[in-house]
Image (cartoon, rainbow, N blue to C red; front, top):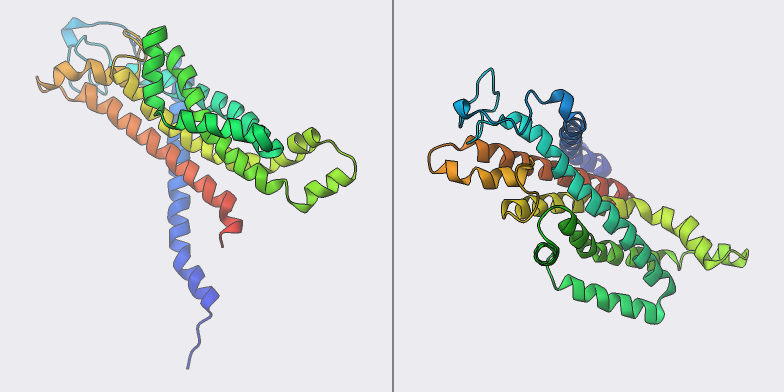
Length: 288
């Protein structure tokens, strides 16, 4: 009778899943890289000025002159998509960078010091958690005006507690490990241990979570522009493009709205796949 090694059987079952996840991760990285390159090199790649109006080609379909057609003002959709990638990526990038820096500092302080500092910061986080990030951004726009600056600042403050809460839990687990006690015995200060030894150990996990946050912020900022509260016309922005194309949908011109909507979905999905894959790879050693 033939015996089967259980370990081998598990490997055989999991291998296709790992290959599929690897393919999705690579494809997502290629998509995100292509969008980033297009945004960085927009003046050299875009075939037209994104604000150039051609009333003789309004709502034109795809052609050699306009690969993705044109909008209600005859502006080339492809060119506006390429330039729109700049604000679509820049806004979430700024939010993620600022929220990650603030969240790490607050979470490190709360988790390392504990006591009343931890209690106060935790209550502040709970208050911010009670309000959705998009609502906070809308309130900021109402107070400081439309554009990209106010929503970026508001969402940075809204997402910082998520990073801080994760950082706090990781730091509280790390500070009880033997290597921290060993550094204390050698006379190293608490601040040095937290910043030079604990922080590098938790940075990969926090970075993976921040990658996921990038996708969420991109979708929310696009929604804000769609509502007319984010990037303002005539600047090219994917959310604003969907908003501007609403009137043409009734007349059968779907392309100006569908193209940026699909772009938002594709980029958000790609970022989420990358973030989830990074989280699995980082936590894979502990979840075998």
